[in-house]
Length: 114
Image (tube, rainbow, N blue to C red; front, side):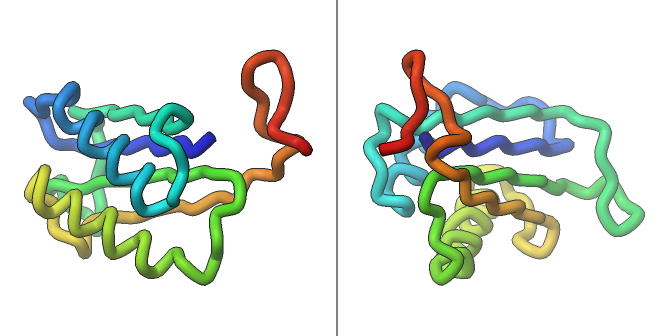
């Protein structure tokens, strides 16, 4: 049920390796089974931030039960990941968090509504 999408202007990324690392990280930080984690990377995008095209990233993280009280720690984990794996300065990463309602998240012919 967690979905994370990264858009970046960086080019030449080994996306297969990066996506595997990102999937494991999201599973760990959200405490959700990795079998439900979906990840997407859009690299080599035409993007500017602060008027420059220096390396940057925009991240969307959506999950059922995403706790507002933990978004600062999640932000730190994701920004640290971007700096380590893609050499993108943490100050050039924006993250949008979204808590999905169980009835509005479909899978396997149904929803996650209990």
